[in-house]
Every structure is written in structure tokens, then in C-alpha cells.
Length: 420
Image (cartoon, rainbow, N blue to C red; front, side, top):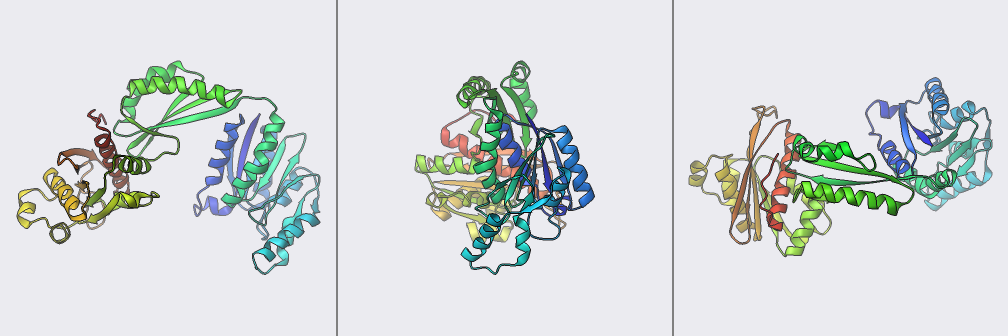
């Protein structure tokens, strides 16, 4: 069984909203063994929506739409779905009562246009929406199955989990499941990872192995097909082990795990506290860390000091030292790592300095050095030069990832060299 996802809304085509719904739907459908073969985005236009839905039903077993089932005049999905499947729209009193009750429960005024949401195509299976006022529906036709869900992400996810996925699994009967695991690593370039595990990528058909490069991070995706989750996990575990043997010490996490969360856990486990000094990354590393729940127990603070004056005032770095060490060099990275550790009373100080920006916010050179230093609780200094390029936000992300990887390796006692 295959599927097509249709995201509906002119705002998606204008770039005003990112289509995260389709990503979630595709992931969930693949997990139960339904391959997504097409994804279409269409605006709030009758003729184009009619054409898209008709074509989707002709070429796909299952068509799932998101958006366009609200109460306003430009919510056209119900009308066009009924037209394409040659049905009338039918009023459901029970759905209308539920919608009205939601407004009562939330102490909100009820507008009569909300009554439109209680109309669904004749013969369709209604899907109640406990998160909002727009119910979904399922239309079973000879051409295929058409499911319409709300565009609000939390509502769509609720209906997918509680109704759509169980319904589709029942339709599938006993079928293959698709399960995956993502191995995450930093400090190693994509080409080097391919060099180390390329033969595995070529050799395996189930599970398959794929690489995806992010800013300063590589994901290795292992995808297995099997009749049960247990069988799929067994297939994945075998490949996982082989990959880890080829990439010792480099993998920092899997699936939804993040570097920031891992560092928070490591600091808590090891009993260390951390402070950060940044000169030209705008406090980005500190901003990402502070978002981790529970980090306040080990994070002593951060200082952003982009100028000579701020280095002296905030980190008590003497002007003589600033003159002795290049302002944006390795020596200064070591100095501010030590200074922020002392200033904030932390066990570990992390200092970042490096690239310069012009007044227009552009990088002065195509490739610029970044210097990252750690002053550890045992008074040892670890430092690294890292060449990178790109606009400021790109460099911030790459530097954040590299700094956390350097810290991870120090906390775990990993001496392995970076090979990016």
C-alpha cells in the first residue's frame, strides 16, 4: 500500500508557514509500512485543489490531506473532496453539537460559520477532534481512500495517532513495518564517514543505510523492514554494531537525542558545573544549552564579550594579556576559558573566539578559524582550531556542535583525534 500527502493552504506556498505536517505524516506512515510516493502542496484554489485530489486518487492507494477543513470561506477541502468522490455534503448534528460544546467549555462565543465544519461528504467516516473544532473524515472509494485532517499540527497529530494509524493498520492486516534508527556524530565529515562505512552502505539492502549531512553533524539512518518491531530492531542492532566498530567514539547519540541534552546528562553524572565565554558567536551556545530542562543545576552562567573593553570589564582579562594574545586567537580562547571558570565559580570553563564580522554582518574571509578551549576541573587545558565558513548563523551552529563535541570527548576521556 502506498500513500500521497496533500498539504493545503496558500500560506504554505507563500513561505509564511513551514509544512511540518507532511514530515510527521510521512514518518508515521512509513513506520506502519505505508510508503509515501508523492507529496503535494496546493493553495486555496478550487480548480487546482480539485485537480490535485483527483490525480492523487488515480495514482495512490491512500491520500491524506491536511488543512482546509475549518469554518472560513477559503476552507475548501470538504467541498472539493465531496466533488471529486461524487458525493454530497451531509450535515451531522452530533458533530455540530460537539463543536458547539467546545466553544461552551472554553467560554468562547459561538459563530454560525462554525456550523460548516459539521458538513462532511456523504458516506464518509467522521473523525472526532478532541483538540479542536474541525473534525476529520475518511472516504472509502473504489479509486482509493481519502482522509482529511485539520492543518493545526497538534490536532493533526492527535487524529493520526488515535484514529488514522489504527484504521490504516487494520486495513493493512499483517504487513511489513518500517523501523529506523538514526546514529548522530560530530567531528567527522560526510566524505570521511562514507569512506569508513561505504562498503556497508552498498552491501546492505535490509536494513538500508543512508547519510544525511547537517551543519557540523552527520546522521546515519538505518532503516529496516520486518513483520514485527522486534524483528526490525534485531536487523538494525546488527548493522548498528558494525557501524560503531568502524566509527569508535564518534557517535554521540541516536534518534531524538541532542548534544545539548547529552552534555547536561554527562555534567550531572560526573558532578561538574560549566560556564561559557563567547566573543563572536553572540551567546548562541549558551542559548541552546539553557533550553535543556534541568541544566540550571550544572550551568553556572555565560558571558558574551565581543570587544576588548568587555573582555576587561566582564572577564577581568588585563589589557596586557589582550595585547600579548591576538584578540581572536588560540591564546585568547584559553584565557577566557580560564577567566569564565573563575568568574562564574564553575568546574569547567569553555571559551570560544575566532572570526570577525564586517559592519554588514558578512564574514570577512571565505574560510575563517574558530578557536575553542576548555579549562577543566583538573586544571588541564584542551584547545582546538576549527576552520569553517558561511554566514553568521551557519557558523554559530557549526561552532556550537564542535564545542559540545570537544566537551563530550573531554568528559568521557576520549583522546581520539577529530577527522573533519
